[in-house]
Length: 49
Image 1 (cartoon, rainbow, N blue to C red):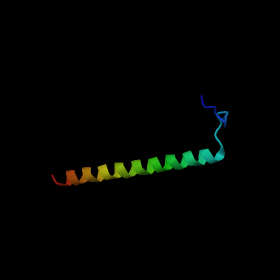
Image 2: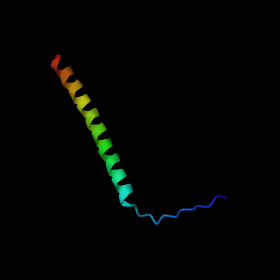
Image 3: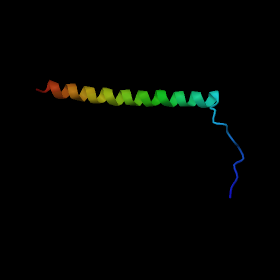
Image 4: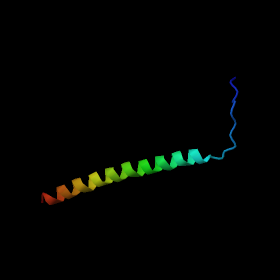
């Protein structure tokens, strides 16, 4: 059976936290773009009537 060579204590380093913050910002940005697209399509739909 393979043995783990690197053991962590469960604490994230500053570099890992920065990486996760960047991921969170990216997810929110993509979500905002999706919501803006849906809202714009909805207003185009309402404008037709």
